[in-house]
Length: 453
Ligand SMILES: Nc1ncnc2c1ncn2[C@@H]1O[C@H](COP(=O)(O)OP(=O)(O)OP(=O)(O)O)[C@@H](O)[C@H]1O
Ligand SMILES: [Mg+2]
Image (cartoon, rainbow, N blue to C red; front, side, top):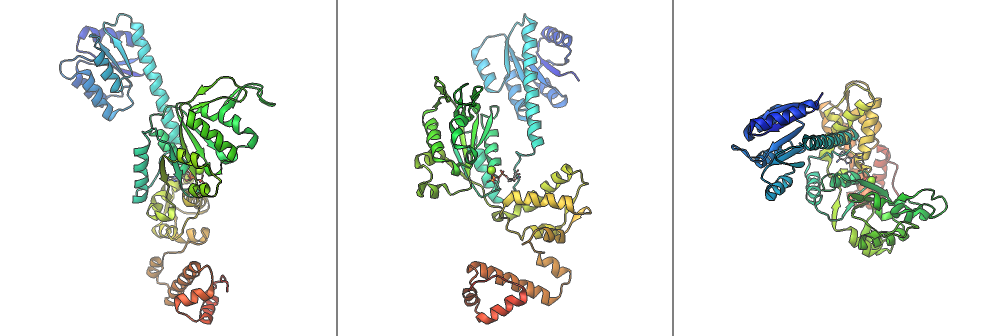
């Protein structure tokens, strides 16, 4: 299908000349004689590029551009102006115009090149967006208050140039947050480069960070750009930063301080413009106190701290997360669509998720593969997730025997109390106001084996 160009000009003969030139190149051409008509056509037709005069009687080109941004933020617009007013041109670019042509347009070649470039950019953008969607990675889920606070912080932080330190347990979405910050920043069209600080062999640290020249050391058969150079203009994600070896800490600190680096074996000093986002599941302040992490580096990295909450702190998001993962898992494994029953979801919410969202995602994938039938029930969940329980409400409705329910409640109470007292039976008995021997008997009856003297 040919790309569609919308030509907007109030002068009929200019409209015709431009349309003819574009049609001859094989484009589908639409025309509008004023700003209002242009907006109507934009709303109605699948326009790929706009070529538009600035001066028009009803609504000028800048106003149209601004309006169009609201519904089609990515639409490339080429502005034409005969008045050479530098202010107009500047305003147009500020509003996100793609290119500018001076009237009269005597060489149609210039017009064609501008349109072709605009289309190339647009298709690159579309491709990028599609890739991101396909990776299914970037969209974070979480309608609950804790996640909304996180998203809000990300939204406010991303457009700045501030360094960010993301902390949180395993599987809580630290990498997703790092990518979201990049995607919402001005650097989004430049690279996002990830470096796992815990996994760089000691002898390769420098070359990994700064690159090397050919022949710099044995095995350096070709020159190579380091991570900082690869990320130039973009974002460098230092993952597992709490596990960065001391030698590497010193080198990273130097680049952050000076914004300069040299490749291994290189003579030249290279400037690099990189925004660093770091993440760790360690308590970095404690690492500093223990002398394992440099304090000066810590302060340089921790300009904006962002914490990703553990899943047990926002269980209200479990239903939405589980539903999304189930949909993806069914599709990935070529299974017919399934759903989680209400009791199954309640059972998922009884679990504490030490592995956080990653653990939930893996469990749901297992359920999608192993369960039959369109609806996953609480029993399926309990069978595959040790530690999860059927919700009591469900069993009450199902008419479970009184003694079973009491027993279940007793088990819950005893287990929680044991946990609170580090498995000491004496302390637990005292806390519950029971004789120690009585508690022992109870534990035996309930099949609870833990407990230290
Ligand atoms: N809010 C969320 N919405 C959707 N998916 C999520 C969310 N949080 C985490 N995930 C998914 O959970 C998995 C783990 O996320 P991620 O790798 O970002 O965690 P992490 O904190 O970097 O973990 P680790 O410390 O183990 O590296 C990924 O598959 C990610 O897509
Ligand atoms: Mg991670």
